[in-house]
Structure formats: C-alpha cells, structure tokens
Amino acid sequence: MGSSVPPDPGTRAERFQRDLNAIFAAAVRVEAEPDILQRTLDAAMRAVAGTRGFLALVDHQTGELAVVCTSGEGWTDDNRRLRLHLAQETDRGITGHVALKAEPYVTGDVMRDPHYLRYFDDVRSELAVPILGASGQSNGVINLESTELNAFTPDDCAHVVSLAHAAAAALRVQGFRARETALIETGNTLTTLMDVDELMAKVVHVAADVIQFEGCSVFLVDEASGGLMLKASSGVLGAQVGAVAYRPGEGLTGWVAAHGLPIRLAAPHDDPRWRGRLTEFPQEEIGAFLAVPITSRSRVLGVMRVLRRQSAAPWFSNRFMESDERLLSAIASQLGVAVENARNYQRLVHVQRMAAWGEMSARSAHMIGNRAFALKGDLNELRYLLEALPEQEATAEIRGLAESMGRGIERLEEILREFRDFVMATQLALAPVDLDEVLREAIEETYPRRSPVALSLDLAASLPRLRCDARKLKRAFSELIENALSFQPEGGEVRIASRLAGPDDHALCGIAPSLASVIVEVADRGPGVADDARERIFEPFYTSRVKGMGLGLSIVKGIVEAHEGCIREVGTPGQGARFLIALPVLREPRGEPEEPRD
Image 1 (tube, rainbow, N blue to C red):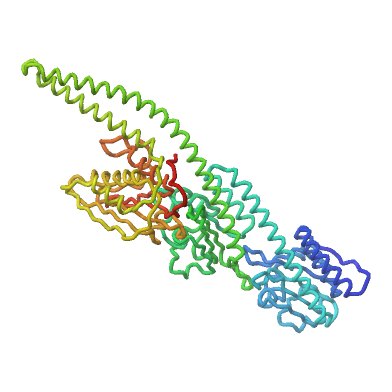
Image 2 (image 1 turned 180 degrees about the vertical axis):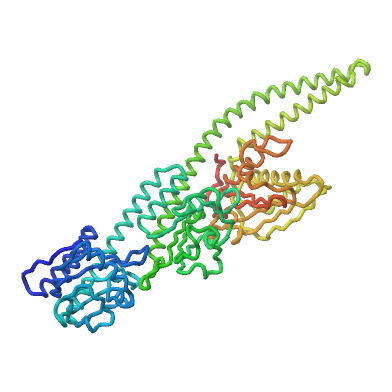
C-alpha cells in the first residue's frame, strides 16, 4: 500500500493539527486499520515535508518488522520487498535500531551515520519514530527520508512522535473492538451449543482471532479420575485429544486447576512447577505461557492454556500481557458457563429418561411387590401344610423346594428395595446435620463386630454443620463401606476419614479453593478400580460383583450430587479403591426447614 502526499493549504502547524484530529476521529469511527496507518504516514510526510517514507509493524508471531504502507517518491513492489528485508537489520539499520531501543532517532547526514543502510541513492537525512504498545515496547516504526541534509528539526520529531502516539491509540482501539466482537460472538455461539466437544473446538478458534499464539489447548476435569483430560488443541496435541491427560495438580496446568488461579510466565521452563510433558510444540521453543481456570459457580471445570514461541527479534518480547490474561479469563468464564449449560442439558435429558424409567419401575415394583406379597402368603400356607403332614409324606426334597422359594422371594424383595432407593435417591429432606455423627451411625449399622477387615478412623473434630438429608447420606456411606468389605473377604483394612477440603482435595475433586467443602474419604486395600472402569462404576446396572444389580454406586452418586457435591474414585489399581466425597459447606437459610425436593 502506498501513496503520494498532495499539498495541503494552510500553515504547517494548521495542517498537522487537522491531520492529528483526523487520525483520532478515524480511530473512533473504527476505520480499517490499513487506512488509518496510511493516513498516519501521509500526515507525517506532510508534517516534515519528507521525500518518502514507510510504516512498518511488528509481526507478533515472528517478531519481524513488516512494511505495511509507503508514501512519497520512488516506491515499487520490488523495492518495497527489499526495504522490508533491510528493516530486519538491527545492528546497522536505523529502523531496526529504533525498534530495539523504542526511542526516536534523527540523522542529518546518513552518509556519516553508523546505523544507516543505503537503499535510495538520493537520501541525505532520516527520521524514525517508534509506535509503542501499552507495555512500552515497539509495535512498529514510522521511517521518513529527505533528499536534503539536516532536513529534520526537533519540532519535526515531536510532530511525528505525536502521530505515532495517535497511530498506537488507533491500533489499541482496533484491538479492543476486535476483542469485544470476539467476546460477543463467543457468548452468542457458546450458549447455543450443547455438545462439549463442539464448545472446545469453537473456543480455540475464537481465542485465535483475538490473542496471537502458536498453541492453544483446553483441558477439562475428568469427573471420574480428577485429572485434566485434553479436549481441544490447535497444535500437534490435536491428534491426542481425548487420549492424554495431566494428573491432578501436575505441572503448571494442573496447578491452575488445583488452585483456581491463572499463571502468566515469560520463561515457563524456569518455574519449579514446570513439567513440559504435554506441549503444543517442542518445549525448548516455548517463550511465553498463559493458563487460566475454566470455572462455573466457584467450581473449577478445567484449564485453558495458550503458548507462544520464543521471539527471534531482539526488539520484541512476545510475553503475554495482563490484557491477554483478562481476555482469556473472560473467554474461559464464558466457556465455563457454556460447559455447565451443556452438562445441565445432558443431565436434564438423563433426568427425564430416569424419571420415565423411574415411573415405569415404580409401577412395576408396585405390581411385582403385590404379587411377591401374595406368593409369600402362598408359601407360608405351603409351609403350614407341610408341617401338618407326617414326616414320611413331607419329603426333604419338598421341604428344600419350599425353602428355595422363600429365599427367591426374599431376593425379589431386596431387588424391589434397590429399585425404590434408586428412584428416591435425589429426593431430599434437608436439615442441619453433624456429618461425623452420620458417619459413626453408618459405621455402627454396617460394620460387622467381628470382621477380619480392620477399621481405621480419622474423623476431624468440629467440622461445620451441613444442611443435608442425614438418612440419605447414611445410605451412601453405608454402601461404600459395604463395597469395601465385600472386596476384602479374607481381611484387609477400611479407612474412613473426614476433613475440610485442602489443596490436594481441590485438585482431585476438581473444586475451587474458594468453595468451602468437607471431604469424606472411604478407602480399602482390595483390588481397586481399573482405569477404564472409573467412569462406568457409577452407571446404573454396572457391577463386578456376583451379588447385586449394580445400582449401589449409582444411588451413592445420585445422593451426593443431589447435595450439590461430587464423588470421585482416585485409588491406584491393584492397591485398593479410594472414594472421595466432597460436600459444599452451605449457609443455613433463615425460615422454615426446606421441604423434600426432587
């Protein structure tokens, strides 16, 4: 892009004032960036009566100077390209020198200047001024030339500096508007998407439009393991989406998830938390790191991370700025709401299906229960008749058959109780509860007095009282204790603990540090849970035991989530299962106790 500068009536000072006002007005009107930059260069040429000039901007990805517009005499496509190459010379070139020092530079005789690179034969004087960014580093350079010796005065330099400031302001306004547009687009788009994978891909695309980076990845907390699963990436990690994850608290990314706080570093390798295990490009090339938590309702859902390569240009630092952090945090916040909405939609669909299934099963259970009751009556009558018969007529085979029928009816009644518990798991009657008291009652009612399995208790004193359904929570704790005992029939240990949630718990359970929570832990020394089964053990009808329908852990999960808590299995396969239940500490509302809710 180039132009020649037409004469303008009025004094030079009047022309300069009009030009400066016009640039600011163009910025407010949000004219196209190339037009504003060309207007700025032309105004600079008029202000100093220059022969020719160019304006170069720093490429934020490569750090190189790129000539974006020219003005005056002698420019062709070929010499623009050559001039661009010469602009990269930092040891001698005036343009590169100004970009490096971020200060204006004037020479009245280029032939005697140590930095000058000869390009046009008629050049005698040169003036170069940096276009500064918010951090004070050079975002570009305005370079002006004259065929006269000592052509540029201190006033000329001051005028061009003012124009450079106007251009910098215009570029910032352009950036703000682009970011505003991107955030609006993000909000409009993300709230309409109900598929989490689509959300991840979209947010990476939106972030690329407003934040310059070479790599971007999104990780979500895996509800089963508590680790950070890769869900989307713009770099080479894209091929490993869904297949790789950080362990809870691992590396910088895991730290962000565990603490719910952002990290912004110019040299991530020097940080003791750095692990460099999953990177979008070779870690030795990483020059800047920015990661922010994805949160919703004070709960950490995941981490959004962007990286830049090391800058090859000495005048340009590609570190992320505070404004980048604020923008990425805003995008992550919108993403958190969108993910929560998508998950709520999926839960709603699941709840509606379960409600339909529950209604059907409740009716079926009622009808089956009636028949079971009738069969039980018939069986009692049969037993009465058998008792009245002489021993030789009531054979052992018939009596054994009657006992088998009795056991079958008892099992049928157990199944019906499981159905009812499953349907009623989320219907709560909330009241102030001492959690440790509930735990002790569950242990007393569930734990055998002469069990070969040792019991280890570590219950914290003076935990805050919760508003819970004590009966339902006791049912959940009892189920976990029974599970632990069933997987250690020959002996072992069950460890039951309670405590206020700490940093490790925040990481394992994916909860924000700002959300006060109480942790209940039930661990054993049984075979543990295989990695590929962690997500399935909470599904209805999934079981690895001979006895039971596989509804136990589904009931536990339903009870915990109805209390707005979460449950995770975080044990090591082969070394025992370890269940963590996180229950939020809620303020007790004033007024009457709450009614049971679905």
